[in-house]
Structure formats: C-alpha cells, structure tokens
Image 1 (tube, protein in one colour):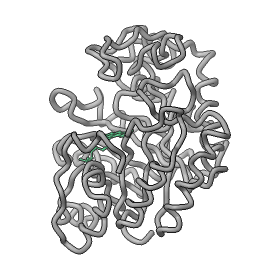
Image 2 (cartoon, protein in one colour):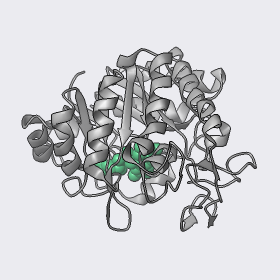
Image 3 (cartoon, protein in one colour):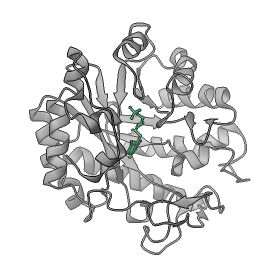
Image 4 (cartoon, helix red, strand yellow):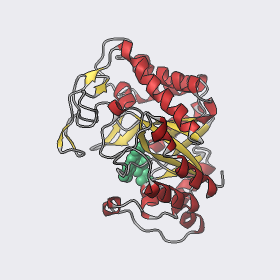
Length: 330
Ligand SMILES: Cc1cc2nc3c(=O)[nH]c(=O)nc-3n(C[C@H](O)[C@H](O)[C@H](O)COP(=O)(O)O)c2cc1C
C-alpha cells in the first residue's frame, strides 16, 4: 500500500438497479487517484432480503458483482486497493426494501424510531430460527466469492452499526434464550459462525471485519459487557485466521469511543488494526506511531474532497463536509 490512508465505507444511494454505474467508477477512481491507498466500498447488500435502503448496490448475482469490475480496474490503475463491504441490514429495514417479506433479526422487536429511507417506522422483524442461520452465512460466503471473482482485493464483512450481526452482539437488542442469546459467548456465536463460513469460502488474508463496539447513537453507546465481548471475540477471530479488523464508531468522536476500544483491543490484536473518524493528521500519526492503528480511515472528508488523501499528505486545506454534498455522486 502506498500509504496508511483508507477511505471508509459510505452508502451513497446511487444504484437504482442495484449495480455499479459509470458514475460509481468515476467516484471511486477519483478517491484512489486522490491519495487513498485502500478504498472500502459503500455497503453492498448480500441478498435482496437483506436490503434496507433506497437504491443501494447488491452482490447476489454474477451480473451485480461484475458491474463492479470497471470500478475495481479503475481503482487499481490509480494505484490503490479496494475491498467490497458486505452488508445485511437485519431489522434496520422494512418490507418495502426486502421484497415484501419481514426483515430478519436476532429479535422480533422492531427498532425504535422512523426509517428515514421511507418515512415509515422500522418494520417488525422476524427472529431467525437457528436452522435458518446457515442460509444467512451462505449469503455472505457467496457474495464474498462473487466479489473476489470481480477482482476486489478483499471483502469487509459489516458487523457494526446496529445491522444484522450487531443485532446479535448487542444485549439490548438480542432477547433470545437459545444458544445465540444471553451470555457473551452466545451473543458472539452468530458472528463467529458467519465468519467461519466466509473464511472457508475465500482466502483468509482477503477478509476484514468491521465492528463498532462503541459509537454515538443519541449519546455514547457501548456494547453491554464491552470488555468481556472484546476479550472473547478478538481471540476467537484470530484463532479462525482473521487478520484485519476495522473498529468503527460511525460518526462519533473517535477518542471518546473507538479510541477506547482500540486501546483495549490492541494487546489482543497484533494483526492489522484499522480505525478512525475525522482524525487530524497529527492525531492519526499519533495513533500509528504509538502502535495502536496500522491504517487510518476517513469517511466524510473523502466525500467533500476527492483528493483528500493527497491534501492530507501535503498539508493543503480541505473542504468541510456538508450533507448537501450527498445529493450528487461526484
Ligand atoms: C453518508 C455516509 C454513509 C455511510 N455508510 C456507511 C456504510 O455503508 N457502511 C459503513 O460501515 N459505514 C458507513 N458510514 C460510516 C463511515 O464509514 C464512517 O465510519 C463515519 O463517517 C465516520 O468517519 P468520518 O468521521 O471520517 O466521516 C457512512 C457514513 C456516511 C457519512
């Protein structure tokens, strides 16, 4: 990799047919040419029943996967690497997005609040039966294979931000009484079985996981049993052969959230550790120089500045992100 600058995954809602387009190619190519060494794509939905958003890409069919080949090729020509983020929304959805079937989750309880994607309350999910879980794992494994066939350098399994896998981790959501709920071990089981299936399908060194044990969701929010969860999950991930981990806090203050988790995680995770959220160059260098992070992620700065990586490297001023910038994919 040409540097330690990573563009983090950001949904852009510009795929009405669930495929990458010419606009997608130009968008990612500009970030690669503009200094990112690694690009994590927007979340790409593993199956039509896993969707929860308007106009987001899917990676269920060969055609959908191959639509990304021009993106991958353009990013490679620009000297960067690109991973495909694999996404299942779970209950952060509505039957409007899942082809009319109820979204699935760890629970039968709907998420609180309104779904901004369709202006309706989140749909009432159906708790997955243990016997159905292998089908979900297979969706991820199948999509991972399709992504690598399309030329992606790797996949990032999205296990954060309150989506399906996080709905198992989080004791406030997971109300199960079977082997997938209750204790720390049980709440990690779904993630570990899923990862095992993905790692059996594609080379281990091409897989990264994203988790968000501490983030801002109407106040700072930690996974219940945070230290025990990290203490169980990370050694289990390593034992399975995973070597790349992205610790996200979504849009929270890094030092109040992920920064704490990274300090807890590092002694257990001697492999590649990735994190960040709007860090200054000095803060990013501090985290790298003290051995906490190997690579640093930026999200919104890359939307505002296609050449954010180059600007960061040579200290040029950067434009502030503004939500109005989300209206177009440029
Ligand atoms: C418009 C937008 C869309 C996002 N979509 C995703 C996504 O699809 N998957 C994901 O893991 N994170 C997503 N995120 C979170 C970012 O990856 C990142 O963690 C967050 O923006 C914090 O980094 P920053 O402060 O550098 O922007 C999104 C963030 C934004 C602003």
